[in-house]
Image (cartoon, rainbow, N blue to C red; front, side, top):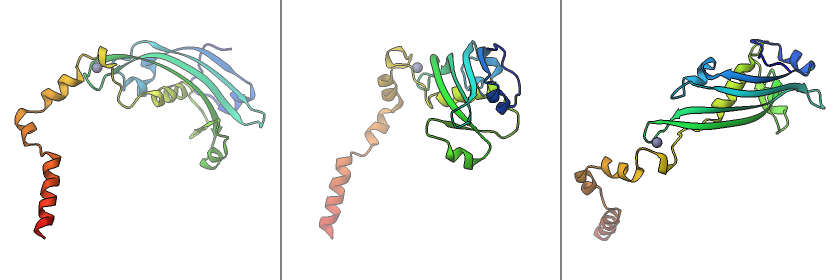
Length: 177
Ligand SMILES: [Zn+2]
């Protein structure tokens, strides 16, 4: 067990040697993830196990847990988002190999011989982020009911066509034919 993630490694070598890693990474060191956060504070706890399965397929299994601060898409305020992921990746070097992986695996397509394990953890956390995070209604600074009413100007509301009026027009025009 190692607590330091190697910067760039040969993933097949790691799997052959059945290497495991456990430790914490600063969110600030995961720039693609950090750029989506309201504040790149804190860290992520991870565990990674590299080995080969019964079919000698190289795989990376792991978990990552972080308390992220994202932006609520309703009130645009900061929001604590606990994220916990577990993954099982089959290492492949082509789309064809990826297609042959059993369902239990997600493909990790190697684009270069060396792999940055921190990027693997970063990718998994990014995939786990909701597209539009929202505070629970009772915690949100904006009350969605107030918000939708205040957004509509009184005149606009009056000018909105009544859908039943449209139906009535259609019926009326049919009669004219
Ligand atoms: Zn909110």
